[in-house]
Length: 459
Image (cartoon, rainbow, N blue to C red; front, side):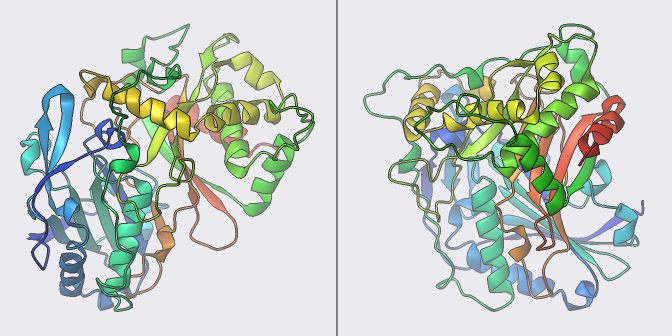
């Protein structure tokens, strides 16, 4: 792979004065990894000829006025928590080039080479010095361009980050102004603990340790196994086939509802996640059919709260849920509806009342560091290993990534630059409007070929 040449690195600050002072985070923000989520937007030629870097920097400076928290810096508080110093310190903007062509990167599956298209963050520096938002514009010899983005997960989640990027793009191409974009709502009042603080009303097993392997290596050894990433495309026809299989031979009892209720069919996410879970069990199968396994998935709670959290909310609004613990043998021997049903059991419990109980649980922790898990950084974290025999699957199916048109057309691909943990996966919308999806997944190298074989078997 050709090397990348950095031509300039500068700090972009808000174009006008912005509010200053300390900004309080919600508990949903606090338990996020404080590292940065790296992602890439790929634009095919002739983008390089029309990319005006100064225009990008100018529009970035302008949008940082309403999005002023992203120009701030984190500060440590007791108990492993943070507050945000709204100091207008700015975002990092890097301009780079490479002799490589876009095709040299293949399908842009997460890798060390793809990670170099996103600005690196020096985590040895004081956290008060680290920008929360970093960009890198890399021009390719073929005329293509990649915009690498790194966003601090403490400040934004996927939904709010995509809204920011798309708003910035609409300003860069001259379609909207600071006044006409969707104005962000920074108030974290929606996900704050109750006063006085109440004890949790539910058993929050999502913060317990995941099941380890019964046979073979220990968790620390598993975490050091060689891993690899892959992008697996699912056509609309393949997705429909999986949904049909997941919804075959189901009854109200298997869906966990009474006979008087008309159950909703299993969704794309439930069918695909169930399918991935079964395939991972088959690929990782050690011969121990009683091996326990679970799937961890984040759920956006904006619409599950009463009243719903506004769509322009700019903070984190997702919490993790777990499927019930299952065994390899039962998942591999049962029809797909069984695994899909277990996925639903996990996600459906995330009601507004459950969310408030999670918030109160988090607020009751003297130190929150042990809860943080980073799936996108090599920075050590205290949380449990979530790889083999388990999975962590996020849904990016509804995010409008491909609206990020900066003036030279839609991206030809969007995806994560890094999946650093075995078992981590995203189910993403694809670049075409044909109903297809892309599964980005990282597994131990010794299991990936078998996983791919089972993944596409019979679909």
